[in-house]
Length: 313
Ligand SMILES: NC(=O)c1ccc[n+]([C@@H]2O[C@H](COP(=O)([O-])OP(=O)(O)OC[C@H]3O[C@@H](n4cnc5c(N)ncnc54)[C@H](OP(=O)(O)O)[C@@H]3O)[C@@H](O)[C@H]2O)c1
Image (cartoon, rainbow, N blue to C red; front, top):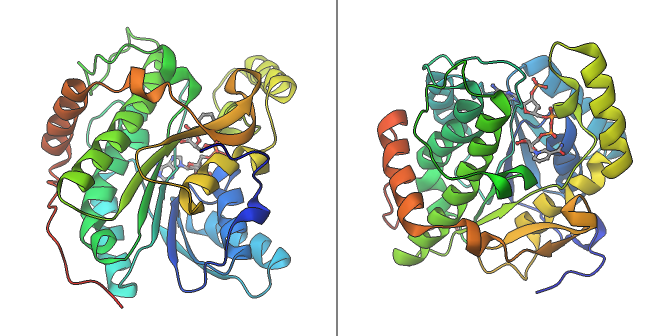
């Protein structure tokens, strides 16, 4: 269904809903948290640097003094940090209405995560695969819960190869970025397929923010390149607040059925209001997605258990 002119003002009241956002301290993650706090959600900001998370909460509270926000440390670069985070999260919360898998890097050079994965594949995709799997029981027992994954326009042009999760200096980092984002998109579709297969009401949705002015483009070692990239992003893209709308729409719209791909409706998908995109059907291949799932379970050591837990009231 089209969402003509949708803005964050269209979000309904979220009182009592626990929302978890990764990469919550800056860019799209921050704007997402602010919008959800404005609608009374209990917002958990998962951040790799706790101070940055607390600063983000101060900024949110300057706008929404009554905001219910909590910062928790989570380093997506490290599977043991993800496990520890989930342990702490479950000790504190007994429901999870919306999980937003947003944290991400676009690396300019080859690096590996603590567990030896190419860093973009590890942080953007495998980390979120593990996080979602470890939180699955909580999601399943929370009525009408959702998992939102963040893809990218760049993934539309990537061949789904997924041969090498450790990476190599010979392959351009941007290729791994595109693969990592495509993996997030295939994961989201496959997750929705598995929720339906097991008669679960939890929904999985994927979205992309077009081209949004955030720090994603401000990282990397070459100053001139960074300046040029930032200038062109400003020219073709949109601000971070509007960039977060596809995430927010996927997370909250009552029109969502599960399995949609939401992105901006204007200028080649780079900006605009959130709408449903059909290209996901061309990108999704059942065989590739199910193989990727198997590999991801092996690499992360996280096996998904789709069993019905008792619902929280
Ligand atoms: N901006 C765009 O045009 C665009 C386009 C397509 C897709 N996306 C996607 O949108 C998402 C958000 O990016 P953004 O544009 O908002 O960029 P951003 O401002 O750079 O935000 C990225 C967030 O991810 C966090 N992060 C990075 N590495 C992490 C780690 N190891 N563990 C935990 N958190 C980590 C960052 O934390 P620190 O501040 O501590 O580094 C930051 O909060 C990403 O998944 C990106 O791929 C963005």
